[in-house]
Amino acid sequence: MADKTFRLDVVAPDEALYSGDATFVTAQTTVGEIGILANHEPMLGELAPGGCVVLTEEGGDRKGIAVQGGFLSVSADTVTILAESAQFTDQIDVAAERSALESATEGSEEYLRAKSRVRAVEAVS
Image 1 (cartoon, rainbow, N blue to C red):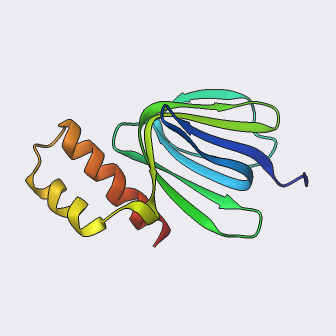
Image 2 (image 1 turned 180 degrees about the vertical axis):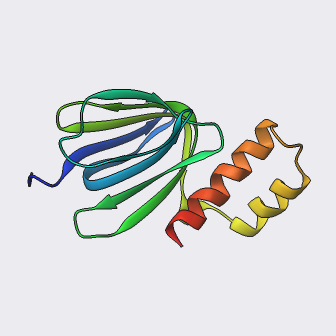
C-alpha cells in the first residue's frame, strides 16, 4: 500500500459494499462533513441521517454511496464505515428519488432516504 492510500471498508448489515484502497473519503457526520486522507488521526464519528459518503480510489475514480445512519471509524491505516443501510449511486434512480423527496414529509425516514440518495448522486456528478 502506498503512503497516500489507506484501506477502506464500507459495510451494511446485508452486504459488504466496498473493500479496497482509497486516497480520500468524505462523509457527512452529525457534526459536519469530514474529509479523510492517509495517516489521519484515529477517530470515531456518527454518520448523519440523509448523508452520503464519497470515496476516491487510487486511480482517481470517485464513487458515491448513499448511507442511512451508522458510524465511521478511522484507525492507523484503515477507515471503516458501518452503515445501517447503503447504496452505490449507480443503483439509484435519481428522478424517482427527487420525486420522493418532494412528496415526503421533511424529516421523515422516506425524506432522509431520498435526500441521501440525491446527495450521493450529485456529489459524484
